[in-house]
Length: 186
Ligand SMILES: [Zn+2]
Image 1: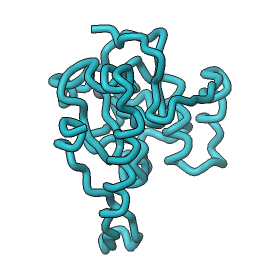
Image 2: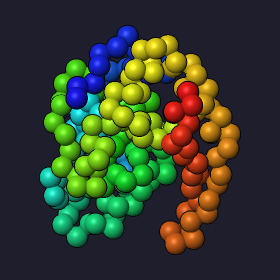
Image 3: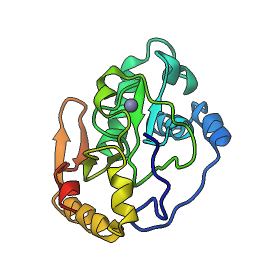
């Protein structure tokens, strides 16, 4: 199902534009941090649901990592997840970008091939809210003028965030409680 074209695509109603070719070129710049390169590659690739699908090994190649780079690649993906940029469940086969960050409104209806996304390949994920319960639900909420309410729910969830120290990687990350029922209550 194609995303419905509405009057607003973000809770606040404003947006910026980006150049896919430039993003792709930047993604190959190995002097930039891995997580940032992954993000640029995903933003150039995303579909209308915010899923950025890649062939096996393609993402690593696009961002200039060698074939022995799974650990580095996974760390970069986990960074994006911990920052609330990409959904938990994002993989090297598909990064799901947050719909409050990224919208692809007018093209790329190709669904991702990540097997674990099969049930929600045509759904958007919103950081601090969760996966929309049905295709088109999030845009319908925005079209119905509920953007400010969604923004308020997201602010409230931010205040309830907890900081977790990850001893395995010895980094401190801020993890956000994701309340998937919040979007239903909006
Ligand atoms: Zn996907």
